[in-house]
Length: 173
Image (tube, rainbow, N blue to C red; front, side, top):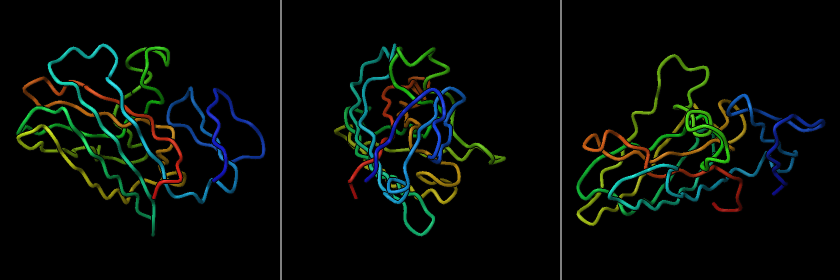
């Protein structure tokens, strides 16, 4: 796998894209074919709630379809909430303002927001999610590498953003 560099400006000789106007994730040619990424989650900044959500997601791409698999724990038992890719590029306050660093749902170029995706937790507050995302890719059309995944609590908690993870290249399959 090649090396990924996160930067505020574009370099030369590498393909690049932007999740937001202030971040470019750049790849060399060998990384462009990696086909896998991960996101390790942390508590969403300024989240104040009764649940300590932990999550891990893997993303892989094959035959033009992006697949995201996530394991979530520490959720509201027997409740449904959201899990969405956002247009932002960071999960800490050092990344910028709340609206800028995680951003809103990522669906650049699509006429309708596709992020109606949800999880349903079991009695222990655990959920497993597998999403097939044909309108997205790791680095091609609507690239998600460098974007963030946000876990939202249920409507009982106003859909609060509880956890966030940046999508980064990986050897994971």
